[in-house]
Amino acid sequence: MSTASSNPFEDSALTTILVVSDMAKSKKFYVDVLGARIFREYGGDSLVLEFLKSWILLVTPGGPTEDKPDIQFIPPEDKNTVSHSYTIRVKDCRKSYEILRDKGVDFITPPIDRGAETRCFFRDPDSHLFEISEYRASKLNV
Image 1 (cartoon, helix red, strand yellow):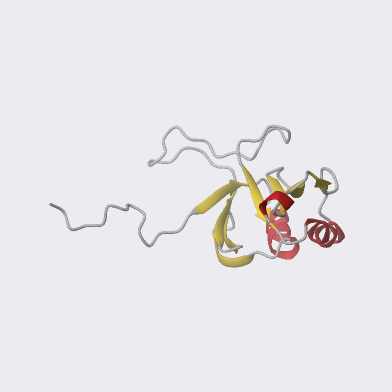
Image 2 (cartoon, rainbow, N blue to C red):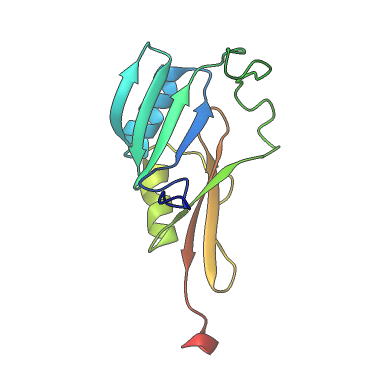
């Protein structure tokens, strides 16, 4: 019987890779607008960010490599087709919306009240989708 842990991800962290078309523009957006912290930059085509206790790796487009021989890294081709998005849970959606809008973020709509949740969506420079969402416990759950 093995004494090794059965958790293959013990003491690990999850990093999301986003392919961006313009590293300088994306760096400015994530650092100056969203407040991400630069952890490491390398080669001019990769940027590791610490954001909301998570990791985001921004990379420029690239072709196959030895360890991923049939994989192409490309930014989103259609801003209205989503295969990945972020949700950021906030205390006050309308306040967060105002702060980000004042920093130049272009929202799809203003915050919409959906009962127990108020939310709105925006995109990064390459159309990766972000949601800010405020959840309020319903009166029935109080």
